[in-house]
Length: 389
Image 1 (tube, rainbow, N blue to C red):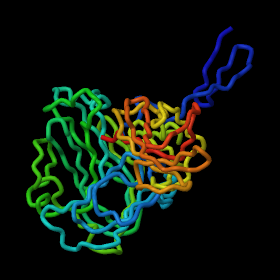
Image 2: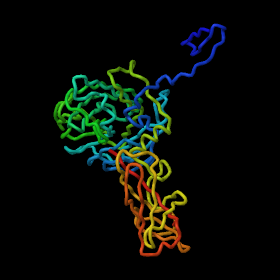
Image 3: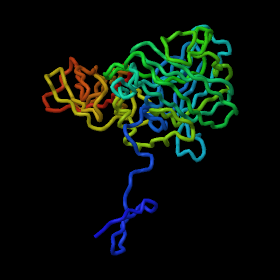
Image 4: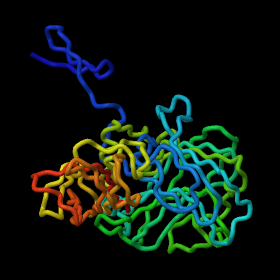
């Protein structure tokens, strides 16, 4: 019996005339996984909105670190404003709440994501076969003008920058930027930060007084963000970004492969390599928040109790563990304590991560009180695990 494949209709037919449907992969399915994690801004483990941001750090959307150096005050949030028909449901929003119309020389505002060196070896950086990459994204801003994107090599202190223009205020625009391969300086093959993607929102003269570094070279501060507008110059300014995509090869907006959408679960799992918490997703870590029921500590001795945490996802490296007490009765500092119930009452005691590995950690609680002779002590607590680059 002969078989014939009808590609137009995804069917196989035999010589008897019977036909069968064929399940094919999604049209944008490809390997490897996207270099940019959480490019669709779907995962926000830490919080969906944080106000009064004046310093650098991770705040809302997973894998995106903000750099703020004396450059206004901001609210950062996961927003539902997205480009129509793009297939995205969420974006990252920046809202300037305290302006800085005159940035100091060293002032800076950027959004950055780091990529592990072992994930970018196929870029062949540092060899004669180094390949180009293309960065694309959707962006919207109240403030029109020139913005700068920078690709950095943290291992060799090298970088390259490209400018793009937001032409229409408060209108979603799609941007595609090409970066050539770099034949100098190989990425280290490890779990450290090697490739960096940075979106600049404002920069002082230390970063803008030279000529924009549109070719790979040793990073020169004055050449990094030349021409960049100052998004901090008015409290009317907002900025949105979503659909961040980094592809191997040189493409334009027509030839670029479609955005590789992942399931929320797969996206969350990739984010949890760097950060995980026991709090509900989107709940800002804080003391006295509702904790998971039944954290069981085993009595080590009369004054010590321990429990083991199995991470949901193996971490990039040994994480920093922060413990938060739960919402049951008890006093204590915001972090580093937990509420324990024994002898018929809740008691607050110091609780720290005493052992840390990339797959699990041990929490130890100490007290001059007697935890009792029972095999288990119930505790009310939460924790966060941070292995960010």
